[in-house]
Length: 599
Image 1: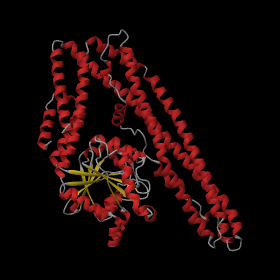
Image 2: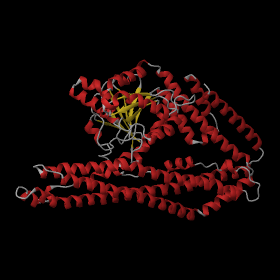
Image 3: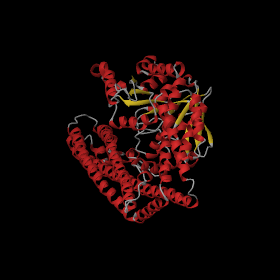
């Protein structure tokens, strides 16, 4: 399909009277129309948190511009486009722009570690102009927060930007490539948006043992990705897997050190060449049209669903509609009792998550204590103070960080499952209850279409509620520093400092061990406390979302049916004529959608 044909269909949709009553659909159309007009090709860099996305973008830029850290650092959308001279604007939600300095130090104020969520809420994205030849052909390179960031606000920022993506660079960790959560994200968030141009990068490739894994690693990974996304199937979203090894950190270090060998072995040059082939010399316009085509299909599907719902209401008579109104009123009256049921279920699930997490924390405490005690007992060096204050403290800190990093995805998954179960239960209840209430005399036939509530509708309402559904304002990683630091310090043991040379090493160990055990126990208690707070906060958010969705969906249904009831009282004669028009429109839209989908 040509770009002019897409424009004509958009204009045709905008002219429909029925579309004017659907602001969500209108917004999607306007965004597509705006992107076509600007003719920008957007490449979005994605990956779970701490996959090295910002480091990779910095390596492409050839300078450490974007903030990087051990903990999740990117908190805003950073859109980088070509400009002869470096420039920066902070684009806010109200449309205003604030000029800023193009520097690492300036951007640090917008990072996850240096800013709070309230301050970031007013920022739509940060626009950066930079003289990078790769971006000359109206290309925008976008650095995003992690798609599994424990902070829901940062995660939502990424999800809301995805529809603009024409292509994606997806970073994997070479040490644990393609986790289940990464595969599910690609399948549930990228493929439905029609995103098919995906380049995979196996970052931190320098950590792979070349003698054991290097030769076959990429081949095995490519086979694994091919099987995961079933590229051999005719209707597979991905026709082939394109993956490159890279060490973004080595690339950036090599650039700063002017070490050409380090840059070459990092793999960044090969990736740059591939991007240049695609963005400067490839069939870029064709790729744009394909992306617009998929987005148009999504809009047409939404339009078809909206017309079908509208048609179902028109087909119902006034008496049936009144029955539906009465049924909704009865459910509204039971809302408080249902709120109690929602909270009771959530609290029960929370207790299960508590138990699961506490068991893991206590096991972690036992293993860590055993490991640290063994290290102290086996020490035979001369500088016991250095060993305790630095090596033991660092070992404890690293173990705490690893537990949080490795275990919090399980907590997050359990919380997400809780939210999904509530969403499923809510959608089932609304559909079944309304059908039962409105079919008491066996006459009502249209409620299934009118009350077509799905779990995904609950999720959409959640976003409108402005309440984080799965994770709260502060993730566990954000409090990690206060959990594990400070640990053992000889400053807390002045008698050891004074008598170290006089007493035997064994005596020093006897004195240190209880202090270390106490520090570990205090850290574990704080970790458990923060984990419980985290679970409490997220459970409360989930309950609030579910209650909001429950009331909001009922209100929308009530509003639609009441409006139709009022209209029916005023005019009856035009019903059949309207239905014929709606059926013709539905047939026409379905035909256009099928034509586009088959091209």
